[in-house]
Image (cartoon, rainbow over all chains, first blue to last red; front, side, top):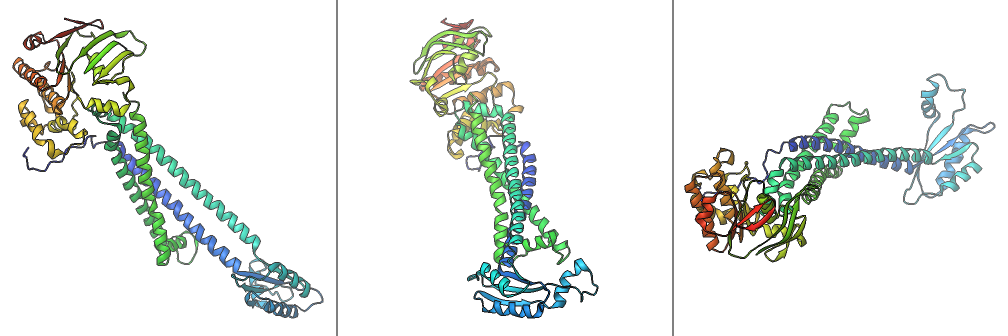
Length: 303
Length: 218
């Protein structure tokens, strides 16, 4: 060996620690599933914002035809009342044809002229200074025959409950993925240590501290976590991209959701990508911390 | 430097392998440990290089009670000890050079800082040409010399060797004994466990005889 030649000493723990290849694959799968769960969480969150935002900006006044009252006159009274209330930005009365169209899914396209069709007024309210909806409801009931105010609170509550259930499910999936990842890393660490027992014994006998031995091994777990995480995120993004590009346009569902995740406006898209990129960091951290703690705990039992 | 008082050792619930072992080594001593196979020489050496804890009794090494040391304390003392194992215990995935340099690397030394020392020592034990060879392709004698080189590279204060000349020819055995004597002259305390009566005769050093787990001066 020449004095000047650069020489890189061999790795103290042999590189052919086979279990880590399988761990990289399983970590990649876990990270892929985590990506899908996080994507679902982002989409649920956005959808809830959009629903609740839309619903809380609007209320609906329904005027049912009442015997002895002219529905058109009652509608005009209701409009006049609404215009006089502060906090209402706009009103839009649906004409009889539009109201009949809303009933088409239930009653068909037949002649509905003879039926007493309830009429609707769409009311947009000022979110920063909303009107007193309870008082408005009372006033409508008192002054307009057959009128009632629908604030969509029931819908909002049901949608929020459903979204919360889906979010909880996604968080539960993420938690289970983390638990599985920790269990896999512990198992792999034990396998690597058992396979390298002789190396560990010799290192102890030449004066190596547990921390030194641990560092020779946990660096591999760091790389495994990082690679598994990056592969998982790449596969996750590819899945969303594929679904977004190949799915039917404008039909809602998974394809639209994937498009809204990947091709969102720049600010939102960056935020989406940033959240998804936490997956490899989390995988690296889980892998490194779990393997180090397992190694230190196991090395304490070596004489 | 090293003191054992009433040391006993048993594995699990088995019989005592070592009973009431008492002896001391002062700094700069050179001593042989002999006895028939199965007498407990290897077990005694394992106690001395801190791979085992005694079932009873006291071991003081470099002035410290080893029973009171934590794991980092044991590692600190092990760095002051060089050990030659009967079965060599070289790491098969490292070259001869890396095996010999292992104690220095573990101590945090940079490769460039020990390269010349390691190559000098490999030349001295006749392994310069095998620096890049891996242990599986070395002969028994070459492994023995590599194991000895690894034990002495850190200039240990205490050298413990278990049958260090068991796999080499008489000429090389004399050469290795000369290395141990030289190290001893430089201040290393040496304890050699061996069956080799010729080697013992050449060194003219005190001999301790271990039989049926009991130690006495020969």
